[in-house]
Length: 202
Image 1: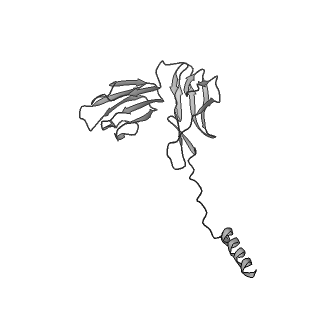
Image 2: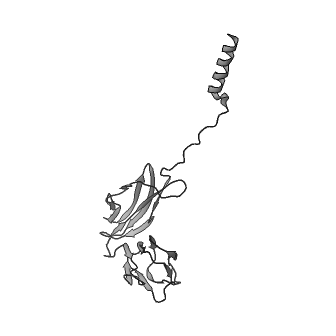
Image 3: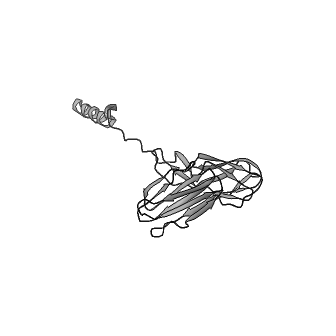
């Protein structure tokens, strides 16, 4: 009988683990930790539009999945669609919010009393070794998205006041640059001599 009781005690101790057993590590946080907007401040005229995009990121800065819900603090000043397209309605200032999984990011939009008829979003593609279009015209506070294909290109802006940051050699990606100052901004791909373009900001 004594030996039977000893075996029971040994078995119970083994099952309890004595508090020294290894515990499984907590799973990594792959949820949305922050949201990045392509534009955080912009100026619009009445009737002008601006396309905002929201990118959800994990706590390690990795892009993750999430659909933003858009809202405006003053839809009578700047309205925003379910897809993030902002439209100037009347003079004033509005805060546009993108909410993804409980995490938000905001952009401040200032609307002037009259529209200038200039777009605040444009794209430049790179068919072959050319920039298309050669000349892109946008309003102040507009964004140009450079669409890179499978061929190495860079975008090096001429040294003028207000120029955005250069884009180093890139492939298969879209890179946006904000133009907040009026002027003419020439740029080149130094990988391919003669490959040039311009952004005119009015």
